[in-house]
Every structure is written in C-alpha cells, then in structure tokens.
Image 1 (cartoon, rainbow, N blue to C red):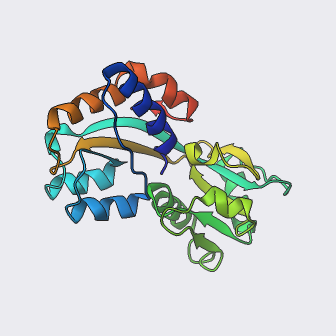
Image 2: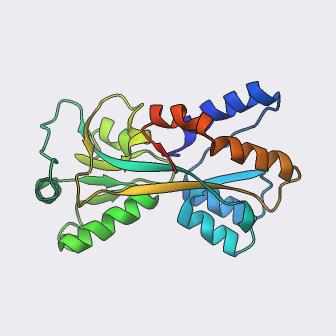
Length: 219
C-alpha cells in the first residue's frame, strides 16, 4: 500500500509514453505475497525488498529481474487537534511512545522494524497492551483519523494523503526506519519483456520526481 499512489502516477506516465496500459491491483503486502505464492497470474510484483526476496527464493518471481525502486521513510503522526509530542530526538520519541495510551503500527516492514526498535529500548513488554496492529490493508492513518489510536507509525507516503491527522515528522536520527520497496517480474508473467521494460521505467531517473512527491527517494 505504501507504493499505491506512486505506482498510479508512474503507470499512467508509462502508458502515455508507450501506449501500453497497465492494470494496478493494490493490496496489503501480506495479502499480495500470499496471492503470488498461490500462483495468481501477475506480470510485475512490487513489495518490500525482504518479502520480495522470499518470493524470489521460492521461484514465484524471477530472481534476475529484481530491482530496488524506492526508499520509503517511516513518519509519526497523531490525530488532528491532539497535543503534539516532541519527537525531535531518539530520547524524546522514546518518551512519547512510553506515554502514549494506544500506539498504531502496520503489518508491513515498518511495523516489524518498530517492534524491533521498542525491544531495543526495553519497552516492548511494557507496551504490549498499548500496541494496536492495523489489520492488513488498513492504513494506520485511518486509525489515527478515527481516534482508534493516539500515536501512529507508518510509511510517510501512506500518511501524506490522510485527512484528520497531524504528521509530526520523520523518526529522528538513531531511531529512523527506512523501508526499501523493490519490483520483479512474476513467474506467471506472459509478457516478461514488457514487464522488464516497466521495471526499467520505474527505476529510471524519469521516475524521481514522482517519488519525491510521494515522500520517497530513488533506490
């Protein structure tokens, strides 16, 4: 889901350049990986690099086709109108987390990295009753906007379009979480050459502007 708006923009541009339309199906990363593993037919798969590496190792995508596409930072947000805790340093963020009644995090790579960070801080066990994982495909921003959580962590690209929240900024030095999303040609692809051409465009310098607009950087 972190790459959904980016891919919508870039696939439209690719279609205008080549005359070839590309149908985008965007779901949570967990569900996407399961569908690829089940043999559902796709031409290109875009996922967090660790999830894509597992699919490549199992032969579900072509290992030689894997390309890193974007680096995506994790940001912190609160519901609109709520007090805005200081997150400017690692120590400040740690205090904000320790004081938050309900903390939202995702099923994706940012959620896994956040739990690892909390464990390193010695807070994971203490906060187990305060941590709320978003269901697959449900944005943490949505949980913030509806008041289900008081502090949320998610890819900046997923928080940017959400109304009803206040983005506090990226996680500070020493506590930064950066995810890399990569693409590959699916083993089921019937158009591998066209799929490769699409991946080249998604990784090209021509895609950099769209990546910046979505809060990402080229990989």
